[in-house]
Length: 112
Length: 115
Image (cartoon, rainbow over all chains, first blue to last red; front, side):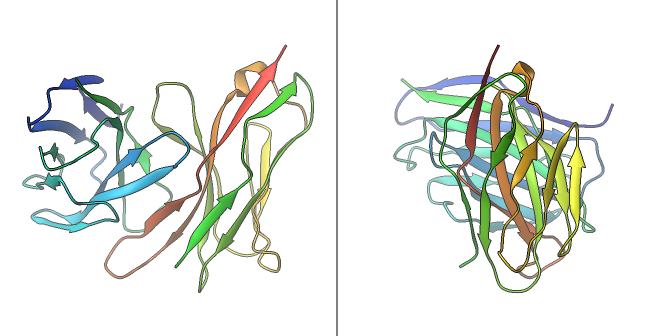
């Protein structure tokens, strides 16, 4: 079945470390997105990519980086510059004619 | 800028009660409107959508009508079940330049249905 796979489901990071969250899709979607979810704040857009080798900053890009070397993959790196990285991270994808996003099951990152 | 406002939760109902979750939006142009549902520990699933004024989206007993005159997209269900307990997100979609649209989400409304 087609879908989006995020891994790992749970991730623990020590302060000062960079960590990379994986997002892979086999839906042949062109666009991919990363959102951050915090309690009571809904979803906030971190980065998005419309095509391979191109990506744009969302509303809260500081302290994060991404790459889009393959259509299927859009990994997110949470750097040590991100001051409050503990959150639930969601990856999504869509097609240009856009009938809604397809979301992955999320990665819960905790800084210890 | 464009935004979505949802009623704050939690909304607590007994099984078989009628559900309304209010959603209003602010946007220029003609956005599409969506409701997503998130079960505990999972990602979001598309529940229903409407792409133009007066459209009604429906799925699994849930309905919402795109009201441009009141800029609203309220979610309703006639008889909720315990299995409907989840967080519900209202969202709008527009093209802000480029090939794809972006979704703007409300803050979500937690629904708890008691047996």
